Image: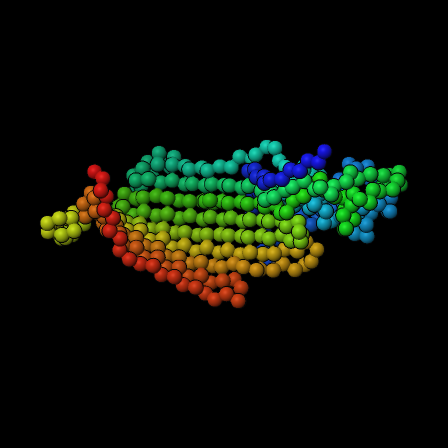
Length: 338
């Protein structure tokens, strides 16, 4: 009976232990741990299989046990997860599937408004923090060429040659195309407040990263993102405008709400080679943005909105040209409801 199973898998996890580790196009501390963890995982798997690691005939020239080489899926997957989750490679599970989801969170704190000075100065004041992380296997399937290996190294018994692949590693029962680790601080920190004089301020920092390990070519792709936003708003109360938009010519008294957001986001895609000291930046850009909106209600049904949106992108690689986009206009919004 041949069982053929395939599908996708994802579960919440936590990468916060390595979230702030040094990592750029020149070097990466978690990636160095990933490389080093391979030998630890390989030795664990070999010991579990009963392979005598003290016998030099059972170890390849690079020090890895025969059948559990440095590019074996059985070795790479737990070594990768251990490095970026910040867990002990001697104890990390060697299974690809996890059973227990790790809680993520969103925290919003408004308790500062209970302090007399804050209550006197602000209409509202909040601090927010959020964290999201996910582990994903994009595609897995049963290996129909799998053969049960005859582990006989300790007794110097012959090995089942059908159980190994072209690289000399034991075949996996399940094949994986690639696995992803995704992390978002959304936001890392966010301050949002409005003062008694109608000035509104929003300050926010977001960070994110995506780590993708491909088993087809043993390359790891790391996408890093960081975004800063500063928003200012102000409400002019009871602004008088003489207009006919709301009916007969009359003086309209309403609030003018204005808001401006300045943001900068930096994205970078880095390809890391497991067995070569050759990291490459293949994509990325710095995006500067300015958004301004102003709205004025001519009546309870009719609102006029002016908007201005400016974006400038400077790419990280020389083959791409800077781009600028500009959008501006006026929108009239009419509500047919009561």
